[in-house]
Length: 277
Image (cartoon, rainbow, N blue to C red; front, side):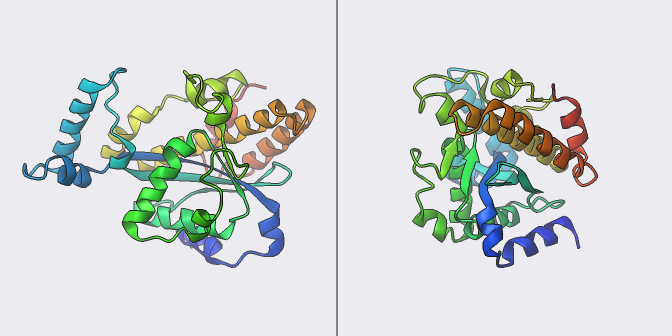
């Protein structure tokens, strides 16, 4: 049974009450690329551009109008190519780690698996960094496109930024957007001795995709998910729900748990080696 089949089987299995109760948080991250077919159809419908040509032209236009010089296309023109998920217990310990639809990493399949998991563990709080502004809309749009139901998600308060069921660390650390978080998750991670970016950034994802480096993209996504998890732990110290000594103990146990999974996720070896402390 390959990883994708195993994950799908896990997600579709009716969870035990204990499993649901123990899963208190779902930490996740996504990576995306421009949807060239959509860009061509929406922006240049009469010009017979290939998806690659449409993306190149749209990126040039975006860069010309950007205050920062970024050529990143709006989220509405993106599609996910990586989704990494870490299930976390009420004791803040990791329970399960997945790169969805590995090793194929097909957009439709990973989106299906993600929303099946959210429906399954619908009592869990979502934990992201800028998930409210990027990851969740990206996945909602993908579900809309492919006709995937997110019934329990939309019936809940997970889309409300002020509810504890949606913990967006970007919102927390910027006072709900009142200040700029220059440096982003990478900065917060490095502040507390985490690896942060290890040579790859979001700007590299589309070139990596064109080069067929889907595994490397998903490795990058997984490491961002782990940074999000450990930043989340420190945020619990910040808001007073745990003490620093408790965080250290949880972190030590989490690191040991990750070390046991290096064979399944080889990138963990590099990630753990670059941790400080």
